[in-house]
Image (cartoon, rainbow, N blue to C red; front, side, top):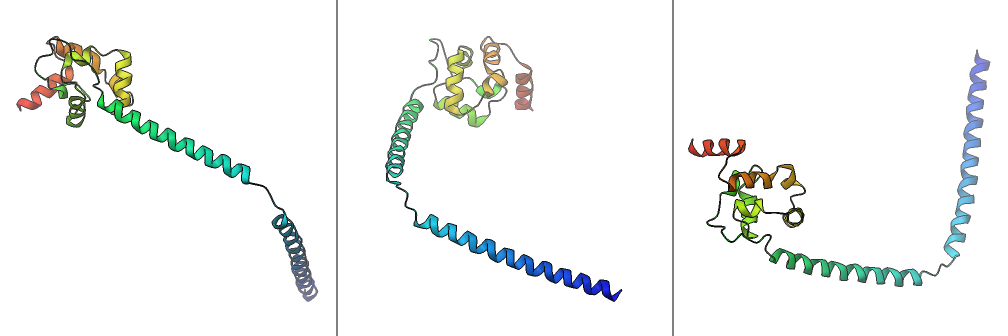
Length: 166
């Protein structure tokens, strides 16, 4: 039994020494390759010039984008029909709350008739400008506005109106 314990200890000691030697050898070997890489010179001036050029183009594009965004925000979203009349309560359209109603008013949209007249291009434009990301189509604002502009009611307006009364 003692013989086995001594043999195991000797094998573990041998494994430790062998591991230390291999570690030292690999470490020394790696140091030489780093020295060779550090001594090598790479011409990066062409890349630096290209990076500077691309950074300038990005800055120009960002400036143009900012200018176009402000111009787009200043344009009215949709022209009011000739007989638009007084502003409607746009919150009666499902999905339009006080914040969105204010954004629509600021953009010149105040009536159901305006929303009912939106084309696919108008919807895309409004989605982009007001960051709705498909909400108009998902909540079917145009169809609701058509119903409301014609004097009808939707399920949402029935609930909305009863909450106003109560």
